Image 1 (cartoon, rainbow, N blue to C red):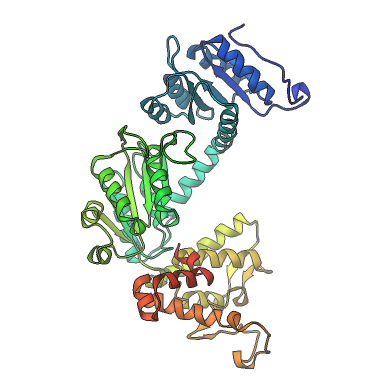
Image 2: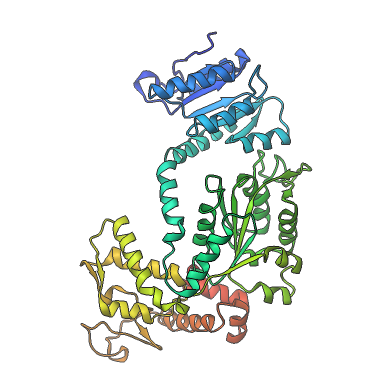
Length: 490
């Protein structure tokens, strides 16, 4: 068998009459394994080539790239003469970053799997590999390759979006936030961000990462409040094959994925006591064990955390570890609610108008004075995120180049407990024609306003709000979700 060989498509009948799914380079010094993989992959519809060692693989990849016939995937053995498969993976990351490598070996260990993933491998499979497992891995790898192919554009957009200069605001509180971002970015110190939901904590976290020396390294986000405790542990630390039902392969966690980069952990206030203990150890020693493994993994990760509840109150109430609080409370950045920086509302509204008019290709260029006045008078329980959603909605729905007052939702048009009527209308709510509807539906808006006012009065502390309303927190959460308030608080 030649060192570089091709096989015609057989099973699917794609052959020369059909475009191959993708180009795959198989790198293995065992000709039997290489031939077997080629036969299987061509039957699946891939355009396949082989190389017996890493040096020739790199030559083949370079030649294909110059001929505009680049490979999308590489499947490589680990133990080969000369350059190992793991060294090849690292070379691919430097020389061919758009190619997705998959490691396939007969000598599988947790240590080698971790090394492969750290080096840039998409996945790590152990021989003999099951056809279905390989097929699914290739499908996921192709999806990854598609994302990598868009990486240049997405990175440019991320740079623009995450730039500190893109955080809009002239309020002294926001200027202080940006001064802190610029000061701490170059260090490795842990940062804790506080503030209500929707104030822009994830945007500030990305700004810290983009301004740091780790800007070209991974940036990983995870939201504790949206994941169950069992899944959260696996998401953060990974698991090994067989660790629990459904764990069919070794899977690295977010901490390993963020190696050399930054991990942003939002809603840390919702972490369980057991998870808090595990996070404390990672923050202290930068090491952990995947679920089901005794192998300790050490990572170099910059950690940024955020909370939308007072950790001091949670510590006093015994639901948040005091030692973890002091561990993460090194540099604190407090993001003000939008109602505490009302002077920034016109700036933010203009920024979001330009952004979403461009994204939705709408010729919307201005906000009418009375509409802007309504936006400035609103209290924004969902903060900056809610303002952006309001502007995007108006951009999409507006029939004219100017956003008029009637393009804003009823919650923005309210004055006290009453609703504002657009200038072209007349009369009051009691004079309006009766529209038949179920009573529970008619009571939704008043109930929503009551909940928003109670949450606002308690700075969105759910426990205090539930106590004031005479309900338990579970009932409060259900009502928030059913009335659409959960989205504002998430």
